[in-house]
Amino acid sequence: MGRALAWCATLALKAAVDYHALEVSLGAHDVIEGAKGMVMERLSLDAVQADHLLRQLAKESGTPSFVVAQRLIEHGPIK
Image 1 (cartoon, helix red, strand yellow):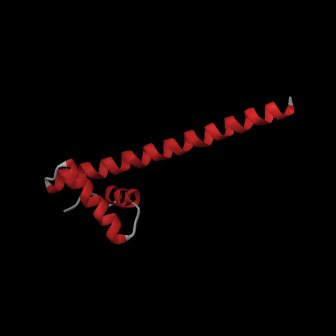
Image 2: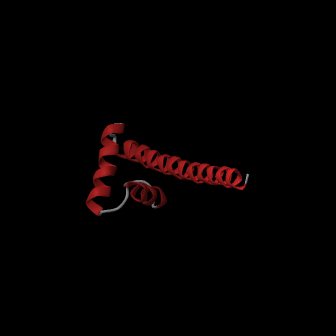
């Protein structure tokens, strides 16, 4: 009985951790999509070009795409 209860608790904890990771991932996706939209609007790029630009900036700076996107949103549009 004790093992079964421990097993259920372990499964519940893993599910909670997985759910949190999914929430974080979706939040990052929203930030990146928002930054991509800003780049598309300001530079008249399509979605593929804007995505490529953000990935290139991340790669060249050694910064995760999420951080590049977050900084772009925090510091305003490209001028």
